[in-house]
Length: 440
Image (cartoon, rainbow, N blue to C red; front, side, top):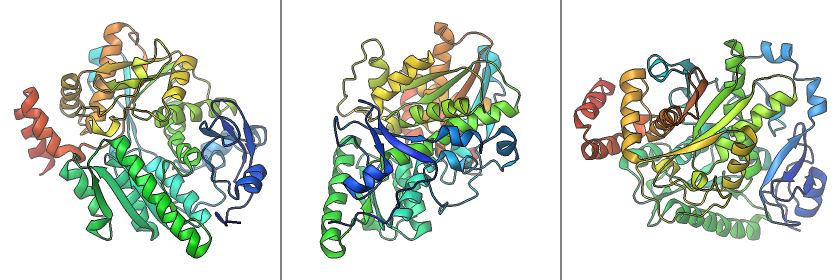
């Protein structure tokens, strides 16, 4: 029998994995016995649906008390017991990212606006450090050696960074339309230029290519060593990968609690696959279950009008994939969102919603973020802010509302696109000023 990995039947305080489609439960003993591994990503017994990690919450109520949580340092592993690990093997001191109050835009809109800045203080300046930290921790626990990853930039940069830090091999696949700045940011962490593979296709097609090549590598590795040694961080053990994104939600909740905010929260995310959106909400709901957070939370997603499969599906509940989406927001241009249906469930359950924004408005909001707030963001920041502006105008976000805008990636990655689209949308002078200032 193939020796798939060296994990045990225990993963921290995990009780089981549950299918998000049909509700089938998989204990760790069952996974190890039937699959030879606990690193399973689909409901193999019944519907092939996605799996979600569930914990022993009753036991955790006696461990993660308010006093205990309060005295711990504010870092990624603050709530280690709510993450699927036995041992922390990846950077133990990854700090919280800042949650800052708006300087100007919030007052202009008549709301209490906060910005969650994963764009500035994450290790590679994007939220992808969150799920990748968990993916690599699981990979180390299980004895994997090489990562295969497809990306429009941020996931690749983060994966390449962690692979270099942890001594793993890394193969990165990107659509050949990706800008040179992002490709250079990836290359700086790769051991060879040949490890960056440019593919003539959309992100979804590039992702399929990466997974196929990873599986081919594993077939050869099984022949020679009897086990798999290659993984795709956002696919091979996706349930665990998503748990890393959960820390975005728990950080926001605990930070606002420290600020004394006790009203309903409106949390806005730029949405591609939907995984961050759903995972953040899950983290907040787990805090509520453990009596560590009380606020009502409404979840809102914002997408480019050129690629809005989740928002388009809100009225009907049916997601229609978009082929080869064309938008300036390449990092969330995912036409067939892997967590799309879960995102719809979160929107419904939380009483939230979403907005789709034309690229011109997205670009303008990116400019406003810099000049009014001093935030240099990827276009996803413009998606988030433009969505909030739209939400206020439509009355979805009431005057005086508490709103958290997630800024998930740094603008340093889109310098080439800033020039390109700045001229197209009539903001050439503003772009020149921004680039002159950040280069000083």
